[in-house]
Amino acid sequence: MNQLFRSNVSYGFAARAVVACGLIGTCAAAARAEWRPLPDALRARQLVVEPGSVHWLDPQGLGARRALLLARRGREPADVYVATARTGPMGG
Image (cartoon, rainbow, N blue to C red; front, side, top):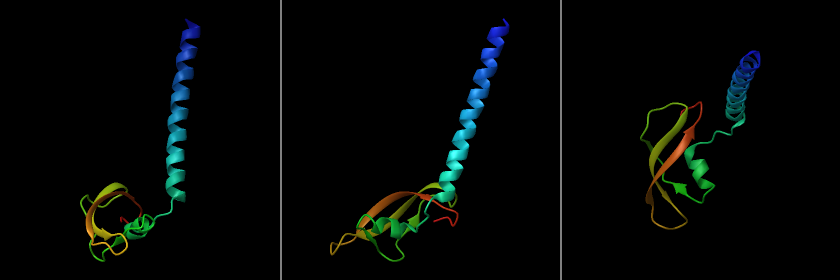
């Protein structure tokens, strides 16, 4: 009986340790993340966002948000894009 109690305590401690490590890892990743404006991030994918065309579909806050925008590749005409982006402390 005593052995069973010890094993439950060990699992509870291990579960709390895993959750704590996950939270610490998430916070550390957010702290070292490079937050860039959406047009800058899309430029890395060879998309040039038309000025003033980004319209956020989801409310401001930390986390994933969707945006509707016009962008073009090279000299091609602009197309409508929907982007999902993790927004930072500045909201977008």
